[in-house]
Image 1: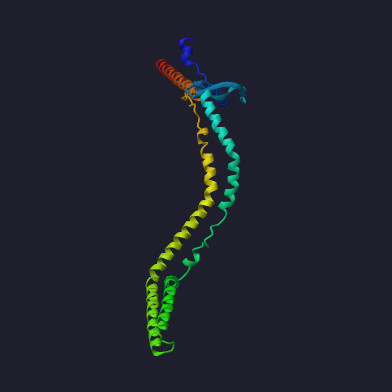
Image 2 (image 1 turned 180 degrees about the vertical axis):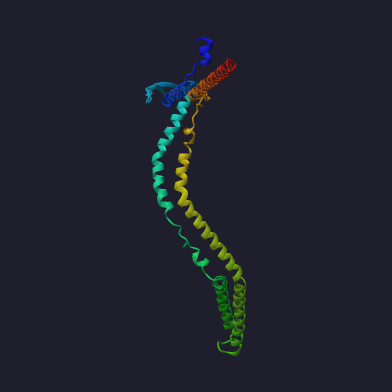
Length: 302
């Protein structure tokens, strides 16, 4: 094509790419990039604990017919680590019947409410005055248990003494001696009664505290019995926590950026359009100059 033809010919309009074709090309590029990334990342690894191997064990065909490999990761422990793992799993397997039994026991114990009617409940539910009176009675009865045989023995000795002295029963001397004896005995029992009353409050407080401690210990024992099956079962499963750890680490991932087919297509299209616009502008300018020259020539020839 000559210079004239290139200046005065009309430029061709660039062909617009088919978006479906472009999208399919981008999809194929992305799948190829993903397959390449998987192949680069699936690095066979060997450590002191064992090894991890990747093998192509199948393929997957995409809707547009691309065949993508599928991998299987296999982790193997070294003989010592495998022996430890097998031992742990065997121990846990042996404990499974016990765990099943504990599970049933926990289901029963955890749904059984606590019994707050303990042996000390009656004391805890009593009024302070009742406890004081009860403590005073208990203290006096204990003192009375010591006083009764003593005063009975003293009474027999006094009666024997009066008989040996020839003082008959019913005489004034006999009555005076017995009255003096009764007065001393009464004073002794009154002193024991007053002491019991004085110690009643303190004894009642001690009795309440003992009942409260017993009540709390009883509830604590019930709670222990309630949760013990669950705690034992958790200990069984807790002992197997190490078996869930992966002894072989995964290799570092290698990222591969997908091919930007759409971007490249758009860039090429834009370049073609820019070239088309430039050629169109040059052609229009040439035609404008030619028209101007023709007009000047016609005017000069008149």
